[in-house]
Image (cartoon, helix red, strand yellow):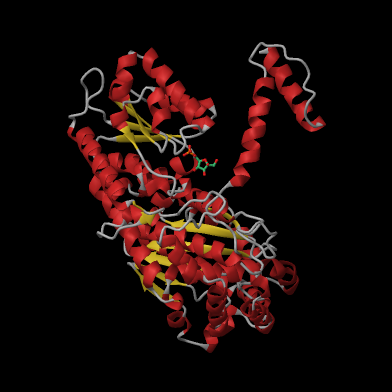
Length: 553
Ligand code: F6P
């Protein structure tokens, strides 16, 4: 693809930045009372208001032109057609097929994959039903009421985020735990809460080779055998979600309990596949299906809506505007919903593993900035922590504010207070407070001129901090599906505009390889190891210091 920064749309957008330099967002709102109508849209039950970004109609037109210059519609078509848009791994990207319950067929390399998807979904449904009914029992004949999902990255963050988000939909009496970290404390702390007779371990790994997951699964197996289970009982208490059935069987898992998916499902897009079984076990298969159907509604919108009325496209373009033209290097995800507390972590992987790239899909150095740093916390907690920097820091940070008009759990005034904060923050970030306003406020409080001179600079808010507001009626399984798919497609669109491959993750490999080299050099407790010599002085020194301490213990 040609260099996006050389396109005429890019150059026009650079001119728009200069033209807007002397204008504030506050002024843009004052100039156009219907600004919010112009810069908002509704799709699949979600409402997006992007009017609190420093944009004009001309900016939006040029952003659309930019998307056209990047052939966004063409690449979107290639993705849905099952072409190998993940060029460095020569793979199709077809997670939308997993949630398409219409009878449309999807093909990869000439093969119709839709029957495979339907078969696997039916197998998941039957398995979940057998666990829920109590027909499937543990080794001592008790029903399996607890699930421990052992996975990491996409095999953990997606299912965990969804299970947390759908807490009110949990089936009574069922418990779900997620173990990801190689830090042994994670699995140990979890195992301490479990009854081996009623626990089902779900080993979730696309490759079934990931060091963290395999080590945690082996520790879970050792614990299970130690606590009364026998070798022959492993098949009743361990199942696998993986593309690597052979490795699952080698672990001791009954082939009938290995749920498969395919290389055209990226790890960070896998919650819709067999990796979603932990979700179905906790909230019921019907709710899992509703989640999938919600995502499909957003897929259909994304696939068919014109660019300027297309929510993922517009969210992506506004992100490009803020990242590349306004200079925002970080982007905050701020759900005003406690049950979405894992959404920022989930989107960190979805976005940063996808778009944290420095070369184009063709291997050329990118000429523009790519994915921003994603971070966030639920509101209102974040307000009492890092919003200070959003309001008055020296960096411009863009944010997505996400809320439901009705809580999953209405309780007294809690939700109106939450919503008032959601609204107030985007207003404050947009409007800011001028020095004149700050001085008038301080004067009204009765401060002296000298006191006002001292305090006024600290009370100024520059404003013009860009935010999107995403509103839904209620956090239901369907709406959650819509929301996640919105972000998936947003990330895809940005990758297309930046000309990068959003579907590989080579950047995680180097550290993994080095850790394998270093592992044999770490002393067991009480062991004396020779001085490390094969690395740089810093790494050698740290290894020796660690080994001295471990040697003494
Ligand atoms: O290391 C990165 C990664 O490959 C992610 O992309 C993936 O979600 C995670 O590891 C887990 O991989 P797996 O499901 O194969 O265990």
